[in-house]
Length: 314
Image (cartoon, rainbow, N blue to C red; front, side, top):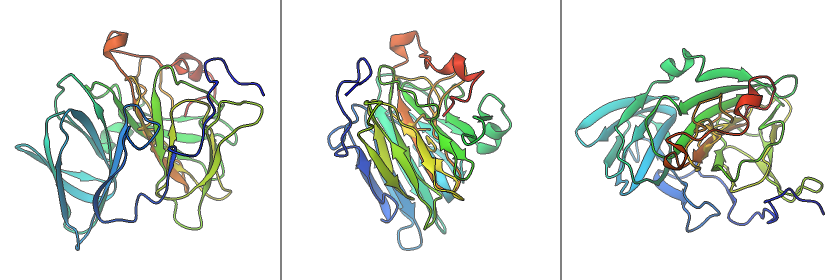
């Protein structure tokens, strides 16, 4: 059995897959360092409707990224009040009192991580992201085409969080070619906008000859990437959406993936790896956590420069 250098520990299903995080009402915390393989990143989901129209909490020593997956919600942070529509996001500093309210229905993904610094409250309108070619772009080629949207990245002052949205073409791969960045960040993918019977397949592995972890993912599922290669593919006729990918990852701050996590895939040169990707009919959000301070305020993903000329983003 051959494994990559520095990746000797195999990936197991335990602590790396969380199912159906979108079937409750109100706010529910699903992922913390205490119940998962994440060392920094946390994930919660708030679903509001007429039966449960509001929720509130305090983020303590965590910085927080909220992404509106659907609907519309009024968000109050201290004395500030604003509305989030679908794909809008907001960066919320630590030590904040947060309240969300919906007049009809709203679905909010929440990513957070401990942070020492104090950064300002910052709104990110998706319309502005879409108009910025450094935050919204297409990557890949035949069978790997995806639309990348960096929601919380170089455009936001933050300590660690990265988040974005990746939307794949139906039946396409994302996070391809396979890549690994455990030394820089940890991340997770939240799959969204994948109505039944849509599904995808997510790999997370360190053994490049016999991948040890592969799982079916559906709407509302979350897969964690503490380390290892992590390509995924949507079923034929299905597009995958995930942070980043809506994949929202926890890692030392760089920018996505989104990530690459939050979202949700990969970043352009000199961009923060924070991102959440939303991929097509099968979808996911990605979040990432990175420590900017230890890299002079900026941490570059090793893929960044190569991704300018190849299909390796996201």
